[in-house]
Image (cartoon, rainbow, N blue to C red; front, side):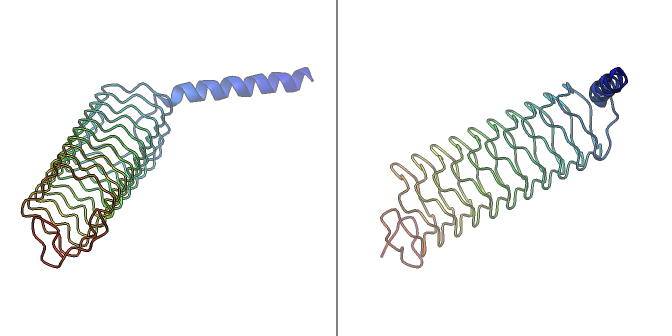
Length: 249
């Protein structure tokens, strides 16, 4: 019995030391950095594909140009991190904190960012096709000229966001809050804006052809020169083909 107990204690000790040592492992594909303090770490252009970095601290870390496809960043702190041009295709960032992070030109196709904090983030010219941002907070984010085709933004908080000239075709924005949002020149063809808060949002020169706006709040919303042909309006009216600036029948 004492022998077995001794082996068990030794295994537990070795397991604990291995977990502690993992944070010192060099960056590599599939590396496991759980609960690690990597604040301010220089990880430019590293290859961390399929790595696990859950609950780690990467605040102010430099990950510009890094290969991060399918990395698990769940619950990780990436506030103010540099991720410009990083490859995050299929990455998991559920409930991650990316407040103030820079992701200009980053690739996030099919990434999972459900309930992530993205306040003040810069996603200028980023690619988020088919990405999931369910109930994510993107208040005051800069997402201009970005690709969000088919993205899921159901229930997302996007107040004061800049989506100028971005492509949100087929995006799901149901019950999203876009109060004071800037969407000039954006494409929202076939986008779902059901019950969305669009108060004071600016859709000037945007394309809302075949969009779904049933139940949306549009008080003081700007639609100057916006294409509204065949859109299903807030009162369930179908806008006449060629409607421009207002829903006509």
